[in-house]
Length: 326
Image (cartoon, rainbow, N blue to C red; front, side):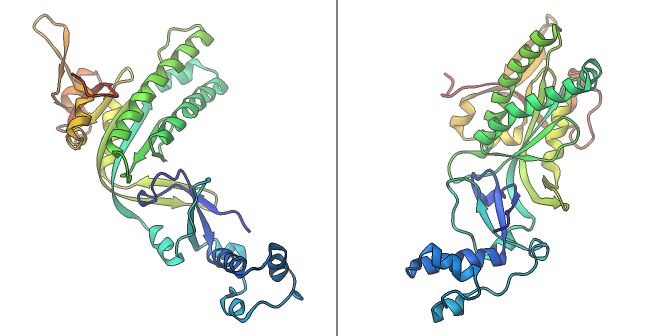
């Protein structure tokens, strides 16, 4: 059997981390093997049947169900037929026509998390190239299990940032998963920062600044001969990226739209709001309120934000509790 073409899951695939696509004739061959085993054939006889011309002839039913001669592998790979979740919980292959339809772009609910390394250009200039790439790999090695644990799917992102998509699941909240992953990522970055401070003897703080939004987006993949990139083509990812741009010091910012769609219990478990300057000139955190991206961007020293998001209401996620806050 050739190796399956492994791609990211689509929203309807549940929590499977990867999906394997097999050509049509391989799926037919597997189905035939299963049928012959059910009819009492031994694996040795099945192997002889498929591997030797002079093998014992199959039953008439087997002849009727036998697959047509396999096309060359390169041709078959152009039209993968079946999607099989990787790992011990794999399910039987889906029908080929259904699988091909699910490869097409789909409109789905999604929460998008975008994270960017603060002052990445400055850090690049301070570190030898091999150490900079080691740092980025350290961040990815920590982020990947966090995203997987919260049922996230990696997306394409330029340079040293990261994008993760969270889709509705049969159990749990995909919106909550995005927030919980961001919160865990922030804690992990604090540990990475301390490790590199000890290693380098520097005072540089390492931050991944995070923006989160939700919406309905067209999801699909761009495929070359050697790679597949999963992506969303619409506004949610752009807004999450703009929010990440003005975020500072590892803060997490989410849209009012996303927070408004959480359940009442989930909102009680989140401390969110904005920091505003009081009469004495000190910044005070005001809970359960929102502010525009324009106002927050100016406050953070990021300049005028992109015109598409200047009026977008957002709030900072300060903490998340496993139980409702009093």
